[in-house]
Image (cartoon, rainbow, N blue to C red):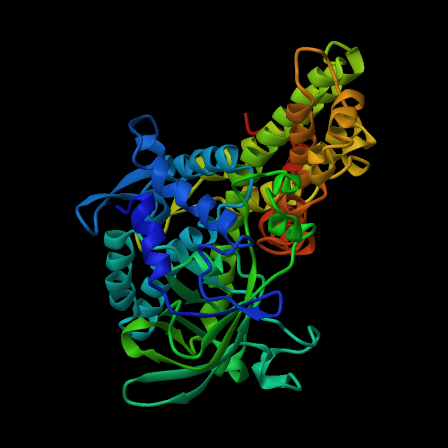
Length: 482
């Protein structure tokens, strides 16, 4: 497994075309906008080296015959599924942000089973190719970006009917050595911190969409691949001297648009090419895996927000007020509800034909639908307790100004036991998580990550088995069988 130093050096060796704020970026590792996000990923390497976290952060791989980072693991049983949720909560607690490896983990578990199923139906060799790729991912402890979401253009139209055929990633040419792909993938979490880009179809497709039904892996610095960094609220605070107004001083997440300009993919890295009848099961499995994941990662970030709110209540001197205590209880109740759903979907998991385990899709979608709502209420309560000071507070530069520094420290003082600087930094952390760049990962991602709320409702309708429940009701109108 990689160390943090190994991981940092591996990123520095990548030669990529990256745009951020209208400029080409030579070194993303040192760039102040990107640096907090790779630190978040790096924590997954750091924690794996600590004995107290070994059970959650590492796993035994039947493929390599050794211990690997759990973020590269194929889940072998229900215990693996539940440990994943616990691992994600731990990572959220330690970073207070998106740590970007979840989607890649869910992606490889999806492809493990789907490539197996395609091979059984068509006699292809996708699964063997994928296992060879997976062996490298596990052996070298690599980060994979799960490139699923296409720009989509006119969403009323399928891929083949778009006015611009590149609005969904597609195969534009084939030869004896592989394929050429063109298009883009949007909202790519942690793309700049990944070693490989693993593309998946974004939706269910038909026979006329065959060229768009493609799954493959390419190195992040493959020729023709470029990245455009996505803006976040208050992100330029990272560029200010000291950067304290950013709130979360060391960790963060990021999104990017990945552009594929006639990128060559060799046969050995192609895992799906035209088998459109398997797009429904691929999308359902990935979505379910990833929606269950939100019952871990967002809960960990919620723990941080609840803790920061508790600190602010104490710093204000109101922690014993009954309404404040009640609101903190409500925040914890909502957060643990999300965690319960994530664990439940894992405990009810089942084994697939390929041998790995799949979460319960109904409970996974219930989990994610709750995530689209409950973090917003947690954030509202946090803002309620902390007060309007988070949007009226002067800048860190003002607190450093020789003429007004002492006056600001005097008038923004809370309880005597806590210095003003500590109080101000905690306010900034709550602001980050509920309004600033951290809110991108905690709130906006809670709504749209792994699909919109309506997508979860559709999956719940498919899996709720209403006919069975109706039969239960009808059976009570009949005489008992004894």
